[in-house]
Image 1 (cartoon, rainbow, N blue to C red):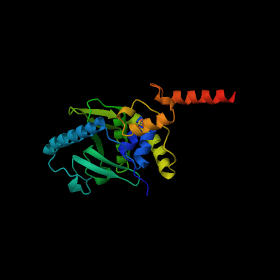
Image 2: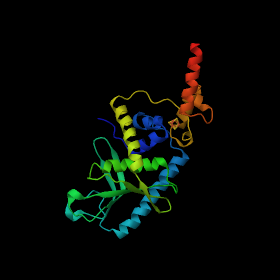
Image 3: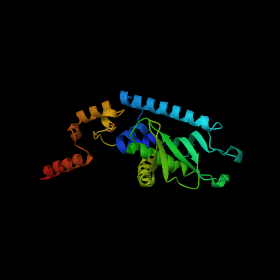
Image 4: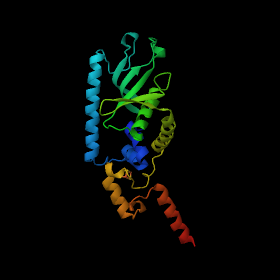
Length: 234
Ligand code: SF4
């Protein structure tokens, strides 16, 4: 059976394709560092506190998507979203419109984060959850909400991110069909916070990877390699 694609893997791809590959296929899941641990703790804490305040307002909250008209609620919390390919959880689903017809029900979604500022990876996660949600309901949510560490809500237009999510999912699905080697190590600005930092630095050192030189990215590494290859042909 294929491994399910999760928000963590999709957002990791934005930082570094190798990280996404390792999260999906490697037995060694890396070493959590201080930053990732405290980010997860802050996210959990913020989610718990925020949802607790909402549950006071919406006391009949049910953790599953409603199945009968009697169960239709304005908000539902921590709803598992699982399809053949994907596995995620929607922190908060908010009913859109006044319809009580189950066939016309639409929900928008919110993601609770553990930071004050919103970054691109978090927006991609929100869009990925919107992508899964669109498989349960008629309409694709065109926006979602991010709840930042200070409890403030930020509306995010998801339209620009859906295309990127589609492209990432194409790659990830292809990997599942025929997983090849992990993408090469290209050290980058995300490495210092990455679970795989130690193993990638070792690979880079052992192979004299050009990206060990500060500030060199994927494009530059490819250009330098091409120049070396061409020089060797002369
Ligand atoms: S340590 Fe750097 S190169 Fe390795 S997986 Fe993480 S982000 Fe990618």
